[in-house]
Image 1 (tube, rainbow, N blue to C red):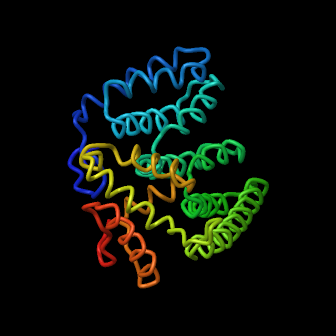
Image 2 (image 1 turned 30 degrees about the horizontal axis):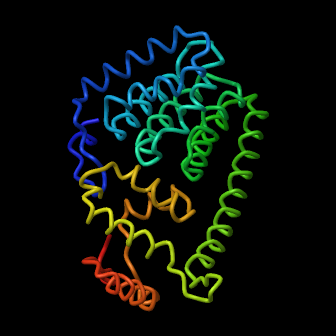
Length: 278
């Protein structure tokens, strides 16, 4: 939490609330939800209430904490899982991934206490990074292989790791195909060149900066949602690219020249620097 508060990471907003204020909000939400019979029905209502008084990044951090706490809660209300599924749709993945190590560590402790593969899988499935999920199963396997009469759960984990490997391989193939498609120069119906997602994103970022609506004035998540909406591309891929910083290779020379010429014709004060980082 202190790292979030003092974050110097580019494009990550500095928290306005103190860690204590955030923990108090987390405690109040968890306490409320554990008393609710149907917490899933009020998931978005609680989110909207918190978001109305805090930064969007603070809201994502708060509900990431709530998620981790309730995920391992001893409360037997099965509806809490429905709540977690619904609320995770709202949490910014850029902040949630910082909490995944907590899930992994707790899962390693749970392996000592359970014989249920379904229980382990339910927790492991909450880890979005497939490589990290596979690593958790590997550590669990190392534990169970040292114990007698654990054949069923070991085989189930081996099968799950095999499935994860297949998904990772298919995702890599799909990503490569997508990159080849998006990196190429598209054409519109009139035969004109169409800018790649990188160039389009940078133009939008620079226009927002000019209007004083850029990252200095807004959460990065809101800006990336706008870019995703305008371009039709994946919010997650746009967020990741902008968070890491968009840069260009010589491949983009022609597109950037075309974009700068159009901007110049519009008498716009902005232009794209092929050597810049956005």
